[in-house]
Length: 255
Image 1: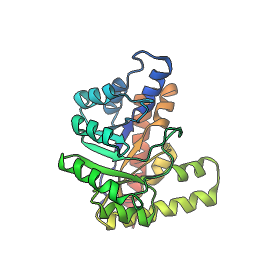
Image 2: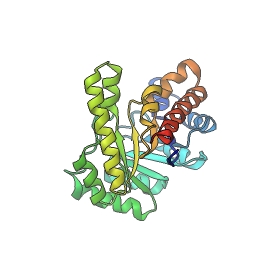
Image 3: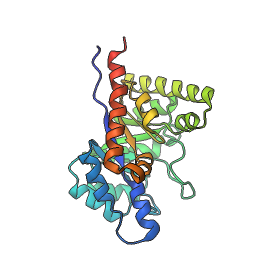
């Protein structure tokens, strides 16, 4: 068996906040969800503070940072407002993502290659504050190379197109997207970047991508919150963790 780095699971609690905000009031509480996820085996918690505050709110970020026992990954757009909040909050990590008000969820990856001049100072400011910076990008060589050039230590590969193709049964498209992810992960690792992945993952796709030894963290939210309606959040996280472990075992067993 070959040595393969451990695979971390980050649980995104955004859509617990979505449910809360649909009705108003304080419940369900994303902080409680975060603590349940950690108790069930999550290695960290992710939350996206959007410009329009459609789910996570400023006070949620503050409470998460103050009260969870695992690292907090602060997803955000690269705006002056969000940089100021991140510097004040002091999360373990920041993941810079593209953001448009009209989108339902994050659509596509950040165009690092086209925005290097704007993104490089943001990466530098956050890094100077001791915050690990990740860039949420498509698995495209030009984006990976640009991420390395501006000094980001981590990328997170957008897996949405692959997951959507798998779910729709578009086999040819799914395999083409998978090959792009596989090659992108290898290229990023060779460039010295830490590689994460996320968006649209379920038990089956998480198990498959866990077999890519270059990837060391998966961030999963919407699927787990949906599963929690039927089996509870703790059970959903444990089942996901088991799927990831099966995939990782295959990576270790590969020649």
